[in-house]
Figure 1: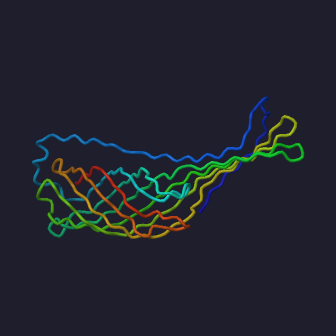
Figure 2: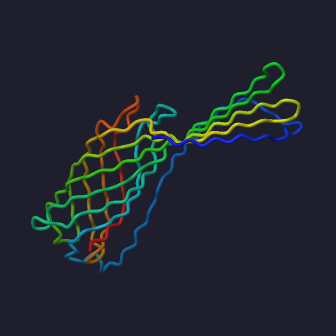
Figure 3: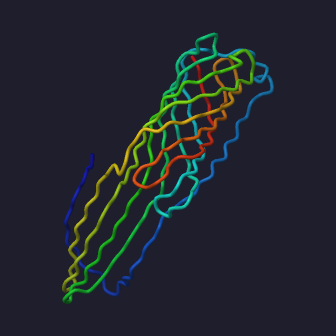
Length: 238
């Protein structure tokens, strides 16, 4: 699916404007530092809620950049909904939605044709979104404050391009502009993944989580989006 908007306008060209071709690749590498403060007494909690849960996670994801074709580390955000713990509080299921921004790519071209200045600018903002389902095993259950877990699952990802193009023609001091923008799904596919994590009880219903995920064969359109993900978050169980 793709959505497109177009617009055309006329404006006066400014005197003395300097124009030069430019290609700018907008890649940002963000690092997330989160400090979790817990009272010493909270660490003595021996049990937690075993009902359905909700978690917010933030972390770092290393993938191949579609702009530079090199490995890059991006910030990832994730929302997780988990089932009730069952099988003696040793098994649950999780549904999560997450994604990362892959940066922005810009191009600019200009040339004179029969006395008409023609300019074109292009911008592509790339992002990666996915939905995943996992089964998780909690070997120690919920009896202690430290609760490791292992899991595996399958996900579905979308590689999305939010783009905008501008076309300028300047004749006799008047500039005509065509603008277009839209959103395209460049590729989408299923992928398997594995995970391991550690829950630390804060109180009877809340826990801090540290999680490692590894996406396997998460690639399409010639890019490899698989690799490690490191997450930090907070989960609340009802």
